[in-house]
Image 1 (cartoon, each protein chain N blue to C red):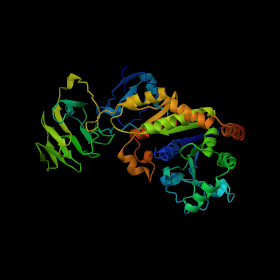
Image 2: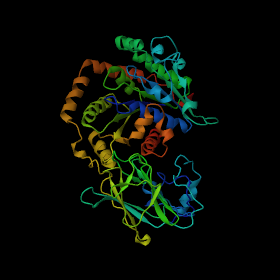
Image 3: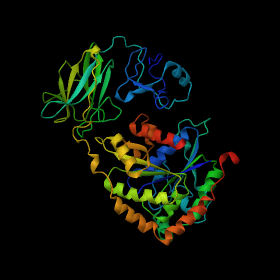
Image 4: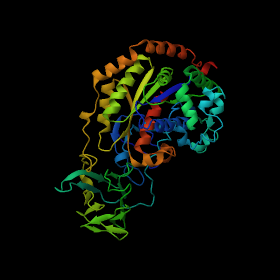
Length: 254
Length: 241
């Protein structure tokens, strides 16, 4: 059965989109069919990591939500961009970007969108693209659309930074996710500064949230340099950040 | 348990697969020793044979096998010195490794998180029977407050060098190979103290109140019902198609 994985964080800036994109690439490279849907409609970003220009994309998620296109028409195959030599492999990676046009973003903000339709779109993607994994990059914070996306997922990945504001907000989000009966919730602590004991941090988060910690990922400059324009794990295959992601990908495959 | 047949460049298949015993991997041909980040978990030889065929190719062992290396470099240690008091904050130990990379990069052999240290700041290389220091950093390497300008500088036992002006100081020591010196670790940084995790946390009562505010009303009950109906639309399992 295809696995739907929501990636969420309480606040922006946790590196959620970056984590999503890298995990999707890592899992696709193992020979799976994977798609990412950027449902962070108010502040889309995941397309950048795949050098996808939504201005040049004929259709985006917005067009689907407005009934102007089928969702597969807004799904772009980025396999060749991020996977070297995909020939002969069953690996496929698709991205459904959100519009970066301010008018389109404003329209969604004003009118909202039909979460039922979005959910239908997920199912169509899974069926028509024969997906093994569907990643949903959510809008940060607590809102109805996001909570419903979380609710229809098999796994919720909650991304947080090691600071008290994130800790507080994540506590609320995690509890709401439990009440929504999310099947599986995994924590990821990202942007952990050097000098912070990652193992101790992992234990602390496990105990505070009574949840499994799938990864504790380091902060450093290389990530900042690469993140906005490329897939980090492709370029730095031995980096601790990449190794942490590989462990998370293994866990998601379980 | 002894491990045979392990060579540089082999897939690091053992990591995460067996986890029975820990040891430092050493190439059986060139005797290159895995560094700090290259600790792998060993399996018994029989397990090794069984696992070698498994597709663990994504974990490629980072050490490059070098056939040309015949003479083993002597073991050395590098000690990160306290800026004013001069005691060691951290010690790294390298045995039969002919290249030691120093910098801020996590993938280096000596990782120092300090703004004055470049990603790859310096390299120690064993060449022509001696350890040579080469500077690659933007801020240079200093000895006795003088910038090293030659491409390489030969280091002798007890030499102290500094990464960037006023930056972290490292002491170079040649150590007895047979000693089996244990690397000691204080904290991975000097510029930033170890971060105290006890200050991290959240207010449980406040969180519970916020949850109650959101989840306590009719809207949330409707949301739960909606979620339940959306879940029913899930596609059938792959195998059933």
